[in-house]
Image (cartoon, rainbow, N blue to C red; front, side, top):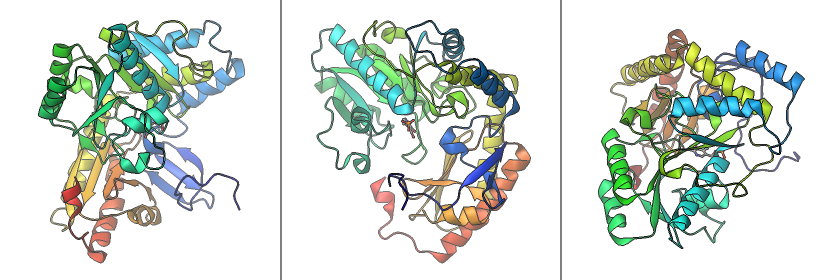
Amino acid sequence: MSHVMNTYARQPVAFVRGQGVWLWDEAGRKYLDGLAGIAVNTLGHNHPRLTRALSEQIGRLIHVSNLFRIPEQEAAADRIAEITGLDEVFFCNSGLEANEAAIKIARKYGHDRGIQEPAIVVMEKAFHGRSLATLSATGSRKVQAGFEPLVQGFVRVPLNDLDAVRQVAAHNKNVVAVFVEPIQGEGGINVSRIEYLRGLKALCEAHEWLFMSDEVQCGLGRTGRWFVYQHAGFLPDVVPLAKGLAGGVPVGACVTGGRARGVLKPGNHGSTFGGNPLAMTGVATTIDTVRDEGLLASAARVGAAIRDGLAAALKGAAGVVEIRGMGLMIGIELDRPCGELVKAALDAGLVINVTAERVVRLLPALVISETEARELVERLAPRVKQFLAQSTPAQPPLAAAR
Ligand code: PLP
């Protein structure tokens, strides 16, 4: 019996080594990594620049605590301010912590304006984490069930439905913020329309709400720009980050600007590990490498090539509902639950994921080349077709639940 708590459904594979977008298991078998640790390994595995920088940092200093100035933290915050266009960064260690900070900022912003019971507009099917506040903000009963009572103060609306938010605005004077995951990752690669994001921003301006963009999964260059809101051409007030920010070293960051700037004051929030020199070296090196290697343009180009390749290879295959996404954040929605495709892909030497029951999710590292992207399509498409040929659609179609 393993002493590891049984909280994950794990595949019976253990990876022991990686290089770029390739992984090797205990038996020496090689796999193409189409998942990058769920959007974490931005630079792939064992990127020489990141490995060297982290190794040198470990030799100098790993941790000191936030009781002291941390020059590496200041350098990382400067870079994040530059790429986000925002002003202040609170460092923590994970996505849920970054979102927890965002929720606290929204509540504090409300209290500072005399609103005693501040409410935050959140979206159906969004995923914000598994702490009590962030699972309450999450739009999935599966994540919440068994952990009630939920944290109060969230008003839920469907994604891409501006009228629903207008209705909330008309009836709820306690709203202080809109919290949106602009491309829902866990929810099935559901992409916000750019016009919708602009409409949400306009509502935030009109009502003096905070615009909070959870870019934990979709941010950091994956979509071809550093952040999804940059496709819409405006600045949010709060941007929680994590996952790919330090190329694999645990880190989270809650970035603020606009109306959220200065809301948290000394003593309002903290984290023992947050912003330690090791993670901060990961942040600075990852950002510098993405920039120096031109990985934003590459993510857009190679991502489009993967989507086009999949569209061509799966053309006419009954059961493919939609191929969607942006850059290197790609979903293939099928008309039936397809969890077993993960195992079939592993058998074909490919690491993928299935989310929202019937969406194949691809989140490869930003360093993936066009040749490797072709290889990914060549390994995946036949498995999808084979799966569809050998299984039957869900009855009635799950589309009703979308
Ligand atoms: N927000 C989004 C959009 C996520 O995708 C995730 C994790 O999948 C989280 C928050 C939570 O991040 P973490 O698992 O680091 O707490």
